[in-house]
Image 1 (cartoon, chains in turn red, green):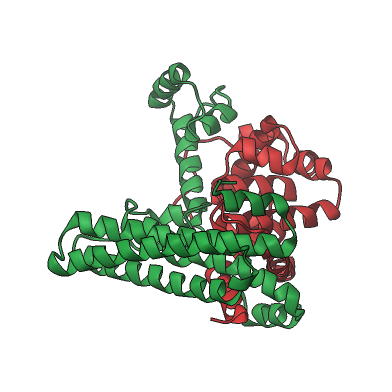
Image 2: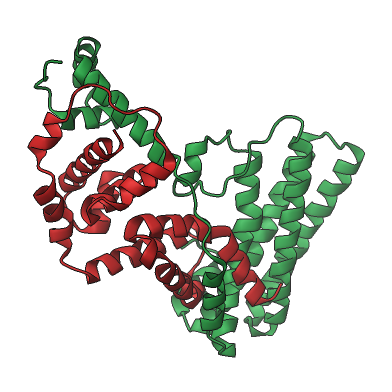
Length: 166
Length: 235
């Protein structure tokens, strides 16, 4: 197997999962560019990969960092994580919306659409926690925020999604 | 419906299993009698399950074409990258295949979206175990042949003592592989012989990976890693 074929095999095996992550983190319009950046960076850094973690995990971390760097470059991180959501959806509204069960079967396409409409801060936390399975401690480390902020943003994201999907 | 004063944050924690056992019992008692909170917990659980089921998205074909067009063509750089990639592919084609597909418990649909469990195939059944083991052996052999090709190509770059040590180790492990295969020919169902074969194959992959890692470290001028690999220590 030549090196080009080997790298293509790597791309075929891992790009769908990484494209799912980038689409949900930064939106479809930027996801293709970021996926390219992820694989070009991986190609450049492959000689540093020593097999301590699975290759999928290594690529996933790389993709997460590329997405977060992109989001950071677009504005102040703290404003994204703690400010934007609160201004548009106050906690009182969340509490007032609690009137028993309102969701039926959640359609994946509807969920993807509602997810894309979330403010960046709580969308990042929701994707990392509920879609990708990271713990709050890990997310707090990645985003550079307190663990409590991660929990609070997740809660707000879920309540907002519940309202959108009801 | 009467609005309950229970905080919705505590219900999110309840859904995530983040509530202390004592509080959890109290909350469960409250949920039994409060339709409002019970409904919210059901919605949050449903939402969380739906999020976990969101799968991979196949990128458009032109993304790969763009990547391919942007890859650097420097021979030295490409060679160094290929060493890392060869080591990486061994993990994908051999180790990951065996441990996730043959020996792991059945994966749920939600597992496939989470770190470390992506790309897991369908669970092995009793009927397919024989086939899976044969395929796993083939994957090991494929990975070994790939690594052997890389190791042969740059064999002259290894220090003489490391090259000699490598030849001795490979000869030993090849002997074990041959013996295990011979035992399996005599007794195809023998679990000890099968375990012994896979242990020997894993060992050979490990030796070849160390060789490739050593060549990569030498090429980068990484003295610390070079010394560590020669000494046989894990990073």
